[in-house]
Image 1 (cartoon, rainbow, N blue to C red):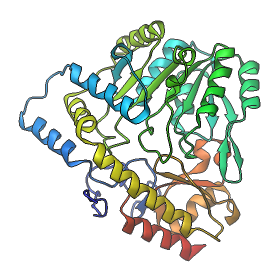
Image 2: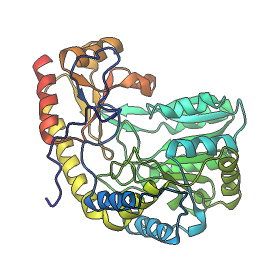
Image 3: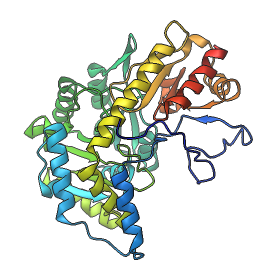
Image 4: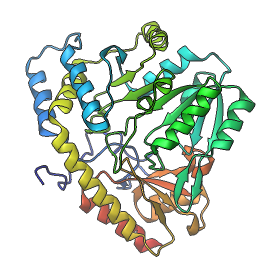
Length: 383
């Protein structure tokens, strides 16, 4: 490989959230495999861009130039076949702040907003914190692969008069990269009942099969969709915040942009702007190698747990492996305690992603192979 993904970096003492002391075990040296950032250095070209920006010593307000939009458009065309128009793009500070602004602008207090659980837990938080009614349709786990229950989805929409759906594509934490027909059916139901769709596609670059952008699938779906993308997950730039709202519908776009202005949100800082441009311009080779490395790590996890009481769900995207630990016989608190105290590994407990996550753990495998081998060895010694 041209790039190095094997070096183990000591991130302790750097104010890294991932490597902070566990609140209940501050003196225990845990292997952190919870929060979704990588233990890889980003592409050298991005590092060089950040260094060159820092050399100027001046960090004033920064305007986003047309090259940025051209690069974003070309990236989507090349990787997904999605032809985005310049006027559809609204940069913002981050995916969740963009989702929150869109939610506030398109719904009012006590309106029902639907999510498919188990799902990224800030989805539920952003709905409740904005005083909207949380409505849940559970995904179906069929032989270790997750599917959307369209009948339940439609039932929940009609029973609760749902106004908006937050859609996770690719899906975190269960690792599904939704097929074209699956997305079309979800979008069809939303259109039938005039439910707006917000599609969080932050993991769209980190996939092992083809990703279909929601707004790509038809003109009608396009007019009903607000999509969010970013390279922060793709290139391990989560600490340099920024995202793109993709809103083809002019009326929806104006409404969301007004909310961004009202809340003084929007735009990017000089570091995010320049690093994102470098990612789109020079980062593809690094990404392609990272995907190969991540897939090998995933395959190692799948192979390691064969014949054990832990059943990993094979992810089609993301670098997060959803571990079915129900055969261990623990309740959720016991399960978390087992991995922390007995195995020395800090993962996300599945119940935080919704009721369907009870008995599961989410493992972040975006780390050097040596770290993953140590974690797996620790677990297998104890099960």
